[in-house]
Image (cartoon, rainbow, N blue to C red; front, top):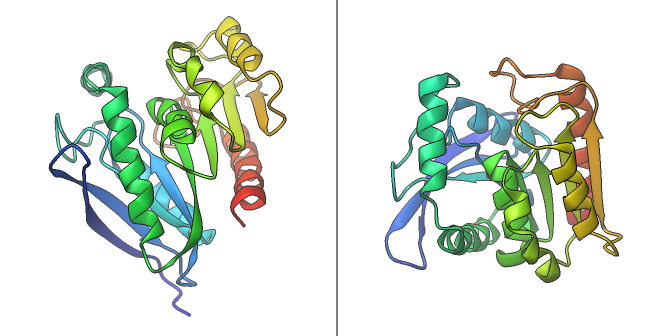
Length: 236
């Protein structure tokens, strides 16, 4: 067994023409469940690559697709006002239905990686949280973890198409997602016993990202532990 993570970029054919890149981290053991890691608005940057590596060390075949490939391939943005403005512009330019088709292709590609043992989950942050939710309805994943997903309340009609287990993480002091929005999301999940919503007190939007001022070690560690339990209960 190797003691190192293997990293590479792969190309995935889009259902709508063209192809897009995806960053891959393979677990040291050489095999494990698949995990689609979905970026924030800042692209597949160093942080998202490190998240993939983190989950690879936990035994997952972690793959982060380039969501913005049609607009700005392999863009990597910083966490400053200019990066935030550019990221929001790119997010506004996404067609969710087309992105869902790309993510479905990414899930299929993960299943065909020899190291993948079969099941594939999704985990996403901010914009990626929304897309991890979309994956549960449209991309055929067996499980999803949604970190402070923005604009979720604009797509709650997808709940009726979701049967797989979901875990939602929200920040207690999120400046982008109101308490009322979280309540609305909880209400939409009524009757779905395999969906759980966790609100992390005294934390802000982006608490999982150690490269941001909003990083909260306590909330990040707690949410990560909960996420690992959720993923292994549903993908193991």
